[in-house]
Image (cartoon, rainbow, N blue to C red; front, side, top):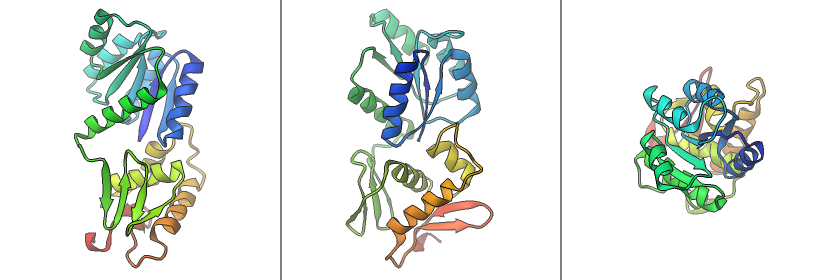
Amino acid sequence: MRILVVEDERKIADFIKRGLKEEGYAVDVAYDGQEGHFLATTNDYDAIVLDVMLPKMDGVQFCRQLRQDKITAPIIMLTAKDSVKDKVTGLDAGADDYLTKPFAFEEFLARVRALLRKKDLAVTTTLQVNDLTLGLLTHKVYRAHKEIILTSKEMALLEYLMRNAGKVVTRTMISEHVWDIDFDTDTNVIDVYINYLRKKVDEGHKTKLIHTIRGRGYTFKGKNDF
């Protein structure tokens, strides 16, 4: 999943980005409201982390403008202001959640996960295709009841493929959702990671789940899905 962080304090922005990437999310960062608005309206984000006190366009104005632009990605606002009035203002502007600085990163991650579940309108915490399961909260993967150990990037790629099971996903789509805006599309990194997943997920199993669609990209299907 891809998250946009709009935060003008670079230390905080870098801290949030690093923590989210360690959890397997693709993360883009903007350091002012105008840059954030541009990214939010030109890219598809699964969630937005938004500071209230921003240069060029403050967080409340940013939030209102996004909702006017019909951008429905869930937004969690971060601010040093903790009054009820400030929280109400942020929520009325279109934010989905409000977190006061300083905050525990564990709580922040829990709130992000809650927003993503709400966005999907799904209560399930497990993805399953054929005999492969992925726990969204536990970050554990099993095939035929045998655990598969994945890196955070492999996990993110597998989750994206499973969420789009049965569909063809292009390399561009994968780069936008699993990597970040600085990803070099001229490299073969995506193909390399697909091969890593094939070895861990499909090797030794009669039914292959990861399939290459020549000239288009990849699809994730079990034998019975064709």
